[in-house]
Image (cartoon, rainbow, N blue to C red; front, top):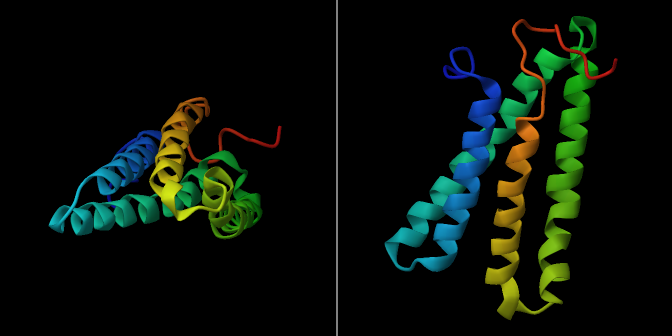
Length: 134
């Protein structure tokens, strides 16, 4: 909330993605109390990213279309995160629990690669000035 109004939203989203990936990598390769710490950090970074998408949407869609833009973010986020996301680890591991560490490492790596796409979004100086819809 407070940082969105003071910092570049694309940078905040990238920090969220980096934090998600690094905390997931750390969770996979530590033990003891550190697993709890990194799992909590993973949740913090992961769940801070979704509201940032809503905030970014308001910068890229015309003022009258913000509801449609947010509906697209919500719909794609729920489809990707809740439906497609849980299907990926079994596909990567071939259904074996033995490969879960590898599957989550692959997903964390993909998350890091996606960060480049965040910075491909045009920079916005004022709300509603850049339209994704032409």
